[in-house]
Image (cartoon, rainbow, N blue to C red):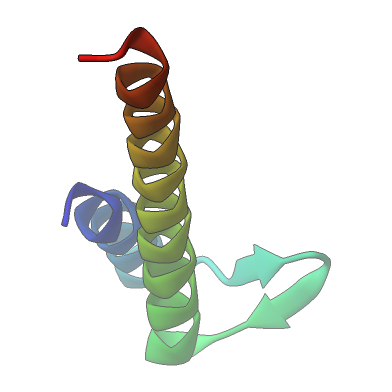
Length: 65
């Protein structure tokens, strides 16, 4: 949820100030750019959390609880 906010707020403010959002050198204008950045940050946050969940589970299993 935080990843979505981290992506949406800055990209929406960038759009409102008249800037074009650039992703890997490709200019994406309008609300499409906002949602691309929002979904990218959300996916990144989800993957970050999933990896840490697996790491902590492996540590718990290795420690024998």
